[in-house]
Image 1: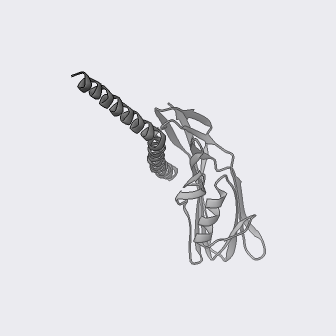
Image 2: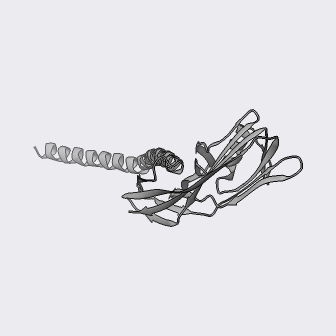
Length: 234
């Protein structure tokens, strides 16, 4: 009986050691996997919410609705409205400048650790350890010699953070459209934290991109400028 009791105790101790080692291994090796999966899910959710917000901005900008609200899950990150970017646009023909626009388009940006996602000029852009990339394209299109450029400006400031939800209020401010039915070319200069992604997108659309500007020729050009006011709170 005594030997059996000792054997059972030893067996229980061995089982406890095995369980402890298993839990330790799961904590050491499994936790990074769990965190990685959580990051992937969070990144996808943020991208989807940003695209939905961009679409809402588009509707308000077109005066389809005077204002709208979007509920945004913060998931431990921060959401802000800022204006640390710039855009300059020139429309020229062979002899003269036809139109110039210099503006601060602003952006709505979500940050969690080293990962960032923003709405800028109507597009949705992300940036992480591998660099900047496009999530959702801006309304800048080149079809042959017909060029269409829609510029969305976000006015406002402020930041919220935490694990709850943020409310984004979007209100129509103003809009204007310019049409150029003549041969010419557009020169754009965009200063942005997501410049790498902008460069790739504009090149794919047919712009010639250098370190200083992007250029495209046209025979018919439409430039639409939309301005919205944005407010954040929790």
